[in-house]
Image 1: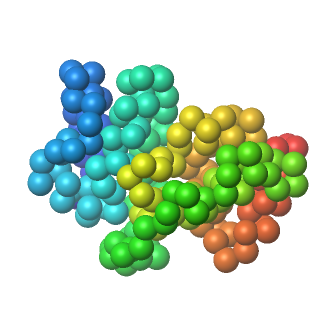
Image 2 (image 1 turned 90 degrees about the vertical axis):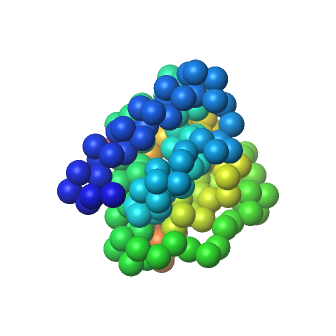
Length: 174
């Protein structure tokens, strides 16, 4: 994928995915051809990074393309900068994530979204776990945080999760 115009390629892929889902292809298996998968991999993305967002957009009218693009941008930057273009060999286990009702400092979902965000940045989410799912979106709305903004903060405070918690508290009370 050409780096200067990668956002245009992602828009074309997104639009195709939305159209394919609307036309009845509602399973991620064989959703993309090999060339598209290679394009996505060149910026650290995979089928589920697009499929989940297209599916939720078609069925729930969110997240929109701009949010998809901004989340992909954060992942792309991490992939190219931190991972030097090399995908992680790790995948987190969905059942290892904190429970959905877990809270820290009175903020429900925060213990769950923090490792999900780091896994999203690293490309380590399993296919059944979406960063930006309905529960995540509820957390973001309740705390006045954009999903891509949270990824950037998670990256900035990756080595000190307590700073990320403080950042969320400050944002929530702002």
